[in-house]
Length: 204
Ligand SMILES: Cc1cc2nc3c(=O)[nH]c(=O)nc-3n(C[C@H](O)[C@H](O)[C@H](O)COP(=O)(O)O)c2cc1C
Image (cartoon, rainbow, N blue to C red; front, side, top):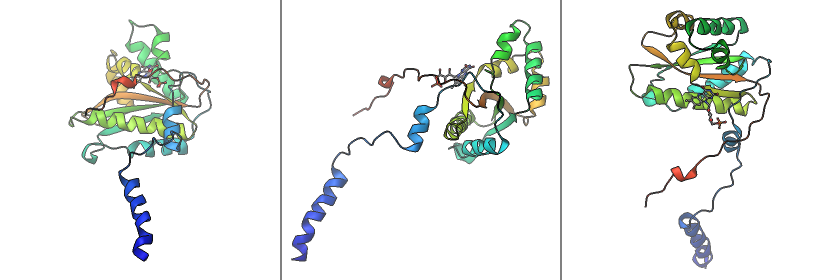
């Protein structure tokens, strides 16, 4: 008798394991943060507290990374005077470019992070990208806006005085400045730019 009663439960359990699952709703906290994050190019002057930045960085360093080599180094500038000094040096070092363009490349973010990759590890660029992604999503979840920036990297590495600017950042030898991420409180709410899902295909 017990066996007969168990049969419908067993059948249900087997079906729920094998039947194709319907799509999960896109509304958990992680997905919401991913879908809500946008590049912010207008910020309030309000600084981001160092405790908050450390939470963001803790998210960053917990990213997947090759062989857990953590093949990155990060420098954070949240002092407006120091950030101004870096920008001034960048302007001096790029005489062919307008001062507005060079200063504007940081998009007015009050906190700038500079990420360098270990040139001795062939996957370090990916490590740094994943670190950066985690930093931006961590920030999003804390209500902090962010922007990933390539231009400052070019304007620093190509500057006539790049050695002086890089000395200020103080990366270890064999680490190459690769990415900047700006942080601050958003003063705009940009819409999502279109994405092309056709770039993703299942192969049967
Ligand atoms: C590697 C990389 C470099 C980028 N460099 C810049 C940059 O120099 N200036 C800028 O305004 N945005 C920059 N962005 C931001 C992109 O323009 C932005 O992520 C893209 O347009 C998609 O918009 P979304 O971030 O709002 O979804 C960069 C993004 C990445 C990933």
